[in-house]
Length: 218
Image 1 (cartoon, rainbow, N blue to C red):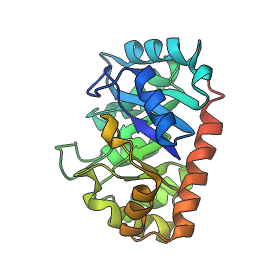
Image 2 (tube, rainbow, N blue to C red):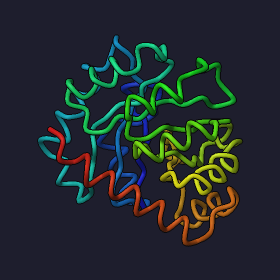
Image 3 (spheres, rainbow, N blue to C red):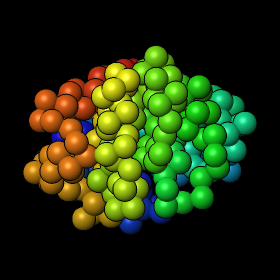
Image 4 (tube, rainbow, N blue to C red):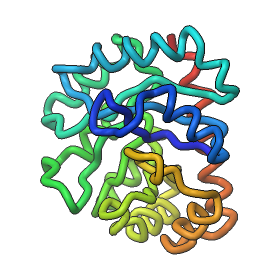
């Protein structure tokens, strides 16, 4: 399993990075991205501190670990600047907190994130078909999430992604140990969103391709 969207004590998660990595490994994951909530105030802090771990001893955990951020409630007009800021700070993966229906995310965030070519648009809510087509064109992966609340629109996201040829990934958006769900439950979440077993396998392949692309970023 691969999870490209997790949180630690560097934002609102419960675990320090090392414990998150270890628990993910024991739960059966072969790769995770640490993507704490970020804006201009803490991008450099998050990335530099997570990379202190990933660059020095993450290999001892016997799994792939990416250092990144989840740009959260960033004004859409500044999204491209913040993506560049994150990459310049050393983020290997950039996730954007999409227009989930359970939070007051600014309208236009999904489009701005896609245009800025983030790696993953998290829980994009009632994303439009135009935006999904653009995500397909730009290679931005759309997230099917196992997290309560954010998952309300999984079926909508899956339907449009399949229709428009956009890439999907399945993430936990883990904030606590119990959020690292089993392979069986991830499968059921995917099936519940209207994906086939083949679609779910492809989502895993998509996630691994992102890992391979992003781990080379230094």
